[in-house]
Amino acid sequence: MAAATSAASRVILSARERYSAVSGVLIRVLVANLAVAAGKIAFGYASGAISILSDGFHSLVDTASNVVGLVGIKAAQRPADADHPYGHRKYETVAAAAVTAFLLLIVIEVLRNAFNRLSGRAAAVEISTASFVVMLLTIAINLVVVRYEGRAGERLASEVLIADATQTRGDVWTSMTVIVALVGARLGVPVLDPIAALVVTGFIGYSGYQIARTTTAILSDRIVIADVDIERLVLAVPGVLGCHHIRTRGSADYVFLDLHVWLPADMPLHEAHGLSHEVKDRLMARYPQIVDAIIHIEPPPLAT
Image 1 (cartoon, rainbow, N blue to C red):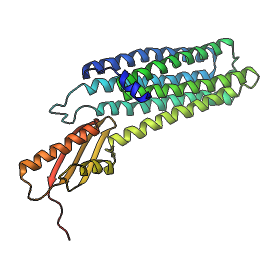
Image 2 (image 1 turned 180 degrees about the horizontal axis):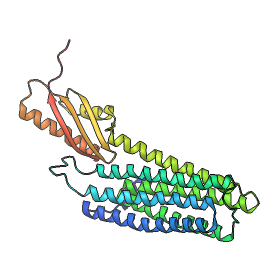
Image 3 (image 1 turned 60 degrees about the vertical axis):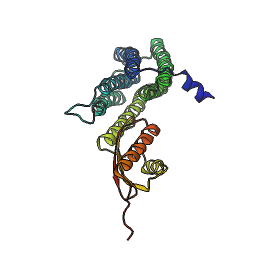
Image 4 (image 1 turned 90 degrees about the horizontal axis):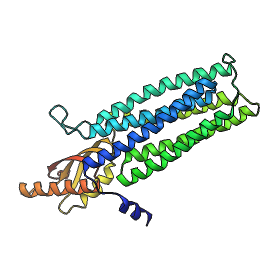
């Protein structure tokens, strides 16, 4: 029932309208994430609270994700051309890969500040009430962003928005870790401040690892849809005797497929051609993320 309600609540939009709507959501979320990051970083530098500063850098990851999403949406609207017969979708992947370098710089900066504090080379910080106000305010903003972006993602069937909302939800837990550290520092355990910064560094590093793993899989043309799933669907088409050499590549929402389909050796060419189109239509109906499928028809191999 919930799934049916969710599907019914989606607004049917043209491709141009959908791209525009998703871009609008990303821009508004980008502004909110920038405000959160700027507030944490500014207060972190001003107060000397390393945990708040590191969490501010972590929030910058959200803004980078928003920018990558906008780049991807913009690139997705560009049709294939003579120089890019497969389209421009991988520009989003390249942009996402560039984010990992940005994350590495953030990790280095946070680690430097945390170790300076742990080694006593940085001045001690007095945790004020304002520290808690800043963190609670940014958590409230993030919760609003999660709710808004998650609902928009469901309504527009946008994987980009849903994934970004999930990442922001994780940031809420990171900020809660910082608040726990601030409470400990306020109670006379100041070492919890740089320790919390190190914990946040782990979250940032893991985000970088996830981005690097995803982009590497796409750029190296790792399989996207399991061969057995493709084969099961193809063999369900009447007249098809078998298939092999199944290959998929691309991203989860932009897949290219090619395969060989076995048809009766005595089937007329025009019938074989029509049957290959039926196979293609069924594949693209079942997997709408397939943007193109190339099917090579051939007789089944001779028995040996």
